[in-house]
Structures are given as C-alpha cells and as structure tokens.
Length: 289
Figure (cartoon, rainbow, N blue to C red):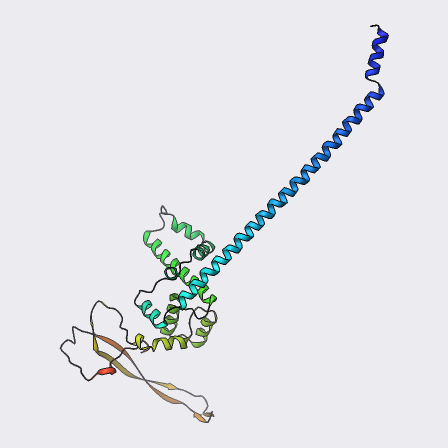
C-alpha cells in the first residue's frame, strides 16, 4: 500500500463524520446512565420511606400495647386496694401482715417504668458494690427509704385511678395525720392531692369495734380486764377582746376546763392475783384516746 492509500485510510477512519458519530453515541449512553441512576435513587427513596413508615407503625403499635398493659396493671392494683373490708386492711397493716401492692397485684411493667424514670446518679453510686465511701448500713437505709418512696408513688398512681382505693401506704399516711392532730385545712389539701384518706373515713375506721378491741402485740402478756387510766384536769384561759353576742350567745372571756390523760396496759404478771368481775364492758381500748 502506498503513502497515498494510507492517508486515505486514516482520513476515512478519523474523519469529521466518524467523530461526530462517536460523540453522539457517548452522549446517548451518558443520558441513559443518568436516567438509570435517577430511577434507582427514586426507588431507594421509596424503600427508605416505606421502611420509616414500617418502623413508625411498629413503634406506635408497641407504644399502644405498653399503654394498654400499664392501664391493666393499674386497674388490678386499684381493684386489690378496694377489695376486703377497711378495718381488716387496717388491722393487717398494724400487725405488720399487710401485703405490699406488688404482692397483691404484681405490676412489673409499672414498677420497672417508674424505677427507670426516677433513677438518678446516686442510685448508681449506691448500687456499686465496690464503692468504699458507701457502707453496708448506708446502702441498707437508702434502699429501704427508696423502696418506701417507690411504694408510695405506686399507691398514689393507684389512688389516681380510683378515689375509693386505699393502699397500705395511703392508710399509713392517713393514720399519721390523725396521730399528729393535723389541721383540717392541711388534711383537706392532702385529700385534694389524694395522698391521704379523709378524716371522717379515718374516724369511722378507728371507731369500728374490731379496731377498738385490738391490742398491740408485745413480748409480754397483758391483762384483758384491768387497765390503768391516768387523768388530770387541764384549765386554760380563753380571752375575748370584746364581749359580744354571736348567734344568740354571749362571747366573753372564760376559763375552759378540760381533762387529759393516758391509758396504760397492765402486765398480766402484776395483776394475776386480782379479780375484777364487775368491770365488764367498761374496760376497753380506744385508738382515739
């Protein structure tokens, strides 16, 4: 092949028409690839949106299920706190045989949720067994106090479910208010927050014959007929600044005469030789004094 023929072949292979055809083919493949990438990206976005929707629906379903289980547990706690007679619940509480709310109606989901919600850094510090700055006695007292607070929190949730429920922690708080002669307005505030039963409810419960007949357990036997009552007069002066009539009665300064005293149980070892056939029903025990 001559030089002229070679040039002709080269010009034919790399002529302007051939270059244009090659560029057009490359551009067409690029456009096709770009469309393919866009389609795959749109499909991926759809898959991601679908996965998020499934995850959201799953989480929503789990949340709905957890709410239903929590409501069921609180309902069982409320039913257990309303079952039985109030005087029987009080007597078992005073004797130390009252079951805890968890024993009456186990609520593991509620207890676990409240424990996680109110947990703090000091709980983790107390829980570490190797902590040298925390003694075994401190850990015991803290765990006991924390358990009492947790029980009262569960009891308050139970009372919020129904006002007629009387968990042991609420009964204990009501008796404490009565023992410390709490002012009626403070007591009303406690009832408004449902942290205690009403004073009328407590008085009616303490006046029940079964409760009045109860004697606190002691290591020594007590005489069931003979008791020691100590009474003393207590006088105090009620001062009225201006004498006036109110409701048809004259209000004026006067001396009030009252009686106070104490009741002592008599050990049987001291009264074993005494006979008291005439005491009868006059010998009784009252929590209200």
